Each structure stands twice: as structure tokens, then as C-alpha cells.
Image (tube, rainbow, N blue to C red):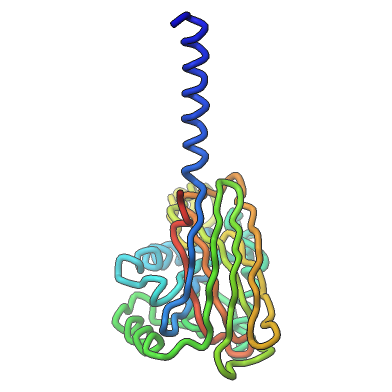
Length: 266
């Protein structure tokens, strides 16, 4: 083989290797809700809040305690109202703060705080009490589902596409039903250099990167799902997950929820 041929062969092998790396982040899979009712546990947090890191760590460890998407979907919403107090949280979004205000208003309260946990749309103040949490989840999981979620997921390094359907079963709220799609990321960390947590490294899981919705219930209690999410350059597709949940806007009760983590791979 001549030197020129060796260089050409090496270039072909290099290109093939690059192609395999790109393909490793792509894939497709099916997501379907369980035969019982699952719910959502939401954490409202901020990197600017010095009482938040212990709850963040507890929340991130729930999967090791057996809390799976078959039981409850975990979502961490970073709020933005701490940002002007010394440290701007790069994961915060104003719409997440607004979602927390909606939770408070729904139950007749004008008070929002961090860290806050909600379970099935209601304030859950007994954090760290796994026995209480497991008991509440067992009761919820014992119930029949009030909605059914089916979706096909198509993921790449730059995009997530969701194609599926939500069906609400029986009379579960009608026009008060809302459907949400959340993209979240695990194994995130920040070195905080200002504010209440200055000098600390903060680790985060289930960080909501994007929340799409609410999508309204369609005719005949069916709603087709067709949605695309751009995966931004600072998101790691291999650590991303997607959650779909159906809730009542008046009570926050979760009719059904399901999640896929990590995203589909080839």
C-alpha cells in the first residue's frame, strides 16, 4: 500500500469512528404509563439558597431508595427570585417561579419558599421522612390510573422528538386537565463563587431544562402529542430524560405520569 493509500484509509477510519460517536447519542424507544396511578414529586430550589443543598442531595438520592418513575416522577425546578441576591442560578427560569406561585395560589397561599417539595400537587413538608413518603406513594400507586400516556421518543445529540397520545379515563376534570412534557438532566454541578453558597460545589439531579405545555385535552378525552425540543449545546444528551404528566389545573392532582431516563440510545 502506498503512503497516499495509507493516508486515505486512515481518513476513512477516522470518519467512520466519528460517525459512530455521533450515532451513540441517537435512538428511539417507547414510553408508556404504568397500569396504576403514578404521581410527581417536585422540588423548588435555587443555588442561591443555603438551605437548599441538603434537600437537593436528599432529592437526588430518592432513586437509590426505590423511588422509580413507576412510582413517582422526580422533577427539580430552579426558581429565579434568588438571582438578584448575589448568585444567578444558571438553571433557573422565570416560568418555574411562576409555576410555584400557581401551586401556592391553588391552595390559598401567597407564600413561596425554597426549598419546597410538592407531592401530587400539594406541599410536602416532611422531607427526609422516607417512611411517610413511601406510605403516601403506596396509597397513590394503589389507585387506578386516571389517564393513559403513550409516546414514541426519538433522540439525537441536538433534538428530542415526542410523538404519542394522552387519553383521560372517565370523568377526571375535562377542561381542567393539563398535559406537560419536561426535559430534565442528571449529574449536574456548579462551583458557586458568590451569595449564600459561596465556595461550595453544588450537585443536582432531575433538573428541568425545559417544560413544555400546558397542552389542553382534546375531543373525546384524547390529545395527540407531537412536540420537538432542541437539546442545547450545554445539555448532555446522555444524561437527559423526559417526563410526561397529566394534572388537574384546579387541584394539582396528577392523573398520571411517566418518565424515561436516560434518553433512548442506539
